Amino acid sequence: MKIIILNESKTPDLLNKVERRCAITPASAQRLVKKGVSLALETGAGLHSGYSDKEYEEVGAGVINDVNASLSSADMLIAVNRPTDEQLSLMKKGAVVIGHLDPFFQQSLIESIAQRELTAISVEMIPRSSRAQKMDALSSQASLAGYVMVMQAANLLPSILPMMMTPSGTIKPAKVFVIGAGVAGLQAIATAKRLGANVLAYDTRPVVAEQVESLGGKFLKIDIGETGQTKDGYAKELTDEQKAKQQEAQRDAIADSDIVITTAQLFGRRPPVLIAKETLSLMKPGSVVVDMAATSGGNVEGSEAGKTVEINGVKVIGNGYWSQYVAKAATDMYANNIYNLIEEFFDEESQSFRLDLEDDILAGCVITHQGQVTNSMLLNAYKGA
Ligand code: NAD
Image (cartoon, rainbow, N blue to C red):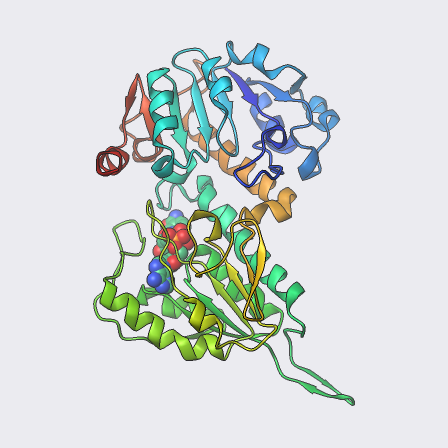
């Protein structure tokens, strides 16, 4: 089986920034090569994550200059993001393409992958099950995002996070409010606690209150009536009345915070707006807000994708692509996720990736196969579009 890895720093991301992550580390490359896989990496693929071409070559991977010349013979193309249309057009029918394909918002790309008779695996669609945890790239990257958001906010705050008692006086701990306590939110809570902040958190799924408290945070109780979650553990969308109640109830907590971090997402949909501009104006000057969702629509009114903007004296960070700020850790985790996915379905005897669509993991994340878009959630979303 021949696998190609792209140097994605050559194709700017949506914000025209350089993608710093790579889909394979020398360690995961070594494990794949040991299985008999033939690996070809585009030169410089690991550089931004701290891995030189030489390190990949030393474990038996090939380093190539002209990736396009190799694509037609590849059985699999692994990316962190989406390959370009040109790259896809060079691949042979039946080859497998893996990456963050953003399928709910990339309908035409996914349909063109199907038309090219390529099999697409979207890492966002890997089920949230115990068995799939080791392949769950959404979670690995979200955990790092939680950490990065706290570090970026701490850097901009004109104060410190921990309490400091010195002969020169006592500094009170910073107040951090985290809205949305999923994977990223919980990691943000843990990071802010480790740095000594007082942490308050809120999520529409009441089941997470216990998790917040076990990390040392306080859970803000808001009665907005029936909320709940989907069978996969994702939040359900709130009604307009519930949204208004939530915003009202959060107002005081936001006004009282030094740092607010919003991480609320709705799977397959635009994220909810949680903080209006007028609420921002209640915060103290110098406070910092981090909008994790800024690149996909935003939780905070006025946040800008890829930028830090100042609104009424409050700094609003909307950088996005958070895990890229810790590209080595992000690459290490993503490469493990990908290795685990391949290993789970690799057939030693035939030296091929077993596309068993009856398996619940592949049934979820294989989104195009044999000329068709195969995922029913996507088909429904595309019909409604
Ligand atoms: P997500 O990124 O979809 O959303 C982030 C958080 O925002 C969620 O906790 C959600 O409830 C919350 N949210 C949505 N709307 C909100 C609003 N209006 N106000 C406040 N909060 C709001 O979620 P995620 O981090 O991907 O996690 C989703 C679920 O999957 C969680 O239950 C998580 O524990 C679970 N999970 C399970 C596994 C596994 O079992 N293998 C792995 C990862 C995650």
